[in-house]
Length: 263
Image 1 (tube, rainbow, N blue to C red):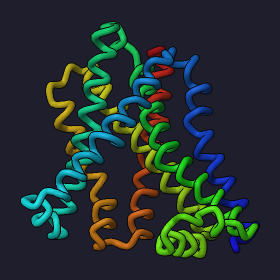
Image 2: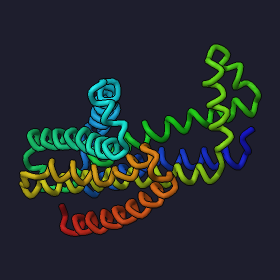
Image 3: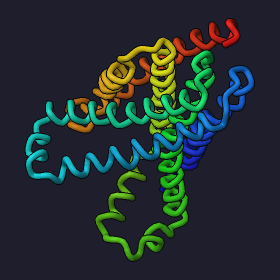
C-alpha cells in the first residue's frame, strides 16, 4: 500500500514539473519574442540526441567486448559517462542553434531564440525523463492500493513484479521532494547550457561547442559517480540543488538585463 499523503505528494510534484516549462514559455514568450520553432527544435534535439543517439552509444559501448572491459573500471566509466552525455547533447544543441542562425541571421541580435530553445530542450527532458516516468509509478501505486497490480502484470516475470513492489515500498513524500529537486535543477541547468551556447554564438566564438561539451561533462560528473556506485544519490542531489539555484539566479539576472536592453 502507498499512503494517500505519498500519492498526493507524487501527484503534486509531477504537476509542478509538468507545468514548469509550459508556464515559463507562456510567460516569457511575448517579452523575448520567442518563436514556436525554437522550442520545438529543442524538444526534437533532446529526443533524438539524448534519448536515441546517446542510448545507442551506451548500448554499443557496453556490449562491445573491447570497450566493455574498460568501462568496468569506475574511473573510466565516470569519465566516459560524463563526456558521452555532454558530447551527444551539446552537438545536438550546437547544430540546432546553427540551423536557427542560418534560417534567420538576425536572430543573433536577440536573446529569445536561445531561451526558447532552452525551454524546449529542458522541457523535453523534464517530461520524458521525469513526468512520464513518474506518472507510470503513480498508476502502479493506484493499482497496488486497489489490489489489482499483480493481475495487471499477470504475464510478467515474477522478478519484474517483485521489483515494482520493492520500488513502491520506497515511495514517500520525501522521494516526491527529491524528484522535484532533481527535475527542477536539471531544467535550470539545461536553460543555463542553452543560454551559454547562444551567448557564445552571438559573440562569434569558435570554441562554443568545445566549451559546452566540457561544461556539460563537468556538471554530469556527480550523476556518473552515482551510476558507478561511488557517490550516494542524496549527496549528488544536494550538489545539483546548489548548482541549480546558482544557475537559476544567474539566468534571472542575465535575462532581466537583456529585457532591460530590449534584446
